[in-house]
Length: 366
Image (cartoon, rainbow, N blue to C red; front, side, top):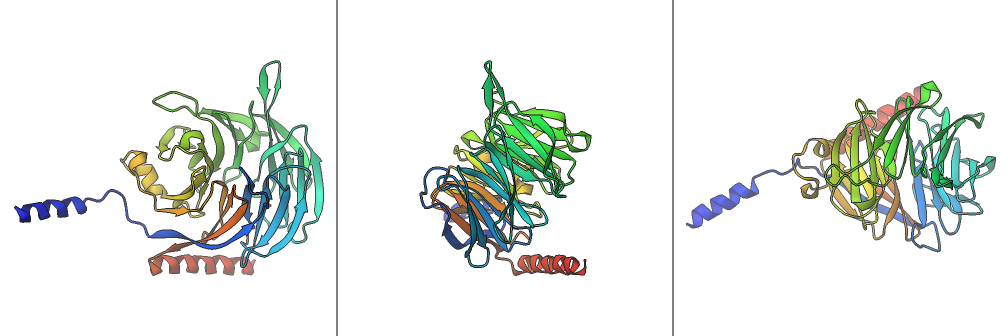
């Protein structure tokens, strides 16, 4: 009888549930970006394209701060008249765009912190992003109400002219904005919808996606959006801990993930597209293998993440460095945190280092 029981236990242990993965996040440093450290304190944290710097935006002390990635030293700071919702480096790393509750977009010199240009909006800025080719800056405003109807505009600026070339309507606050990797599509999200815009046709509306739970049919409020690095998928996160993934060919829902129940503030892909990371109103940063997310037959609440890092407090933003070796996170306790993305398999790390050296060699050759 003992032999039979042991054999049964061995067979259960041998049943695989998901592909093994040794990827993990290791903490490097934590810095105080907002001394007040309350709910929603640090709204964003983003790497420079070369990974040497990080820029953060804060809610209560109204600061845009540049940090040196290697040791977390503060390089400069810019004070504003209100909450700063987002700050982001241009693709060439020369300037930073930042916007927030004072209804202003600022263009800041990345090396010195000097404010070079400003634009006054009619309403507060809630989101912004650069196109990958650096030609466009998309700035999303908060919504407003007229005759019981909601409006939520976004402006597209040409760069380096910094002139408005188009305005688009989302009908709600533009909580999240994104460009596709090939620069052909722009996306805005707010409330329970995503709108896809044709960049090459003067940002005309191409598609509207309504995010409804397939079982309850309730609309899902969305606050974050991103394209996969290969451009094949759009991922969004929002309330109730729900993540939607659509394909960009037919805009069909290919995966609905529900596992935490906590609001998801940000979703981001590793640069190679192998991993999906998200964070929000739980105390953890979650990383998933995209192959498992797309192909696993397990319900999402039974799937195991590749790594789950305890981050002490709720997160507002996540961003991978361009080489995929580091992750920065922004938290409601007023901190910015730097993580190293490591693998216990030395061959995997060696391949990543070789790829980085190849990229650096090509850049120096140009």
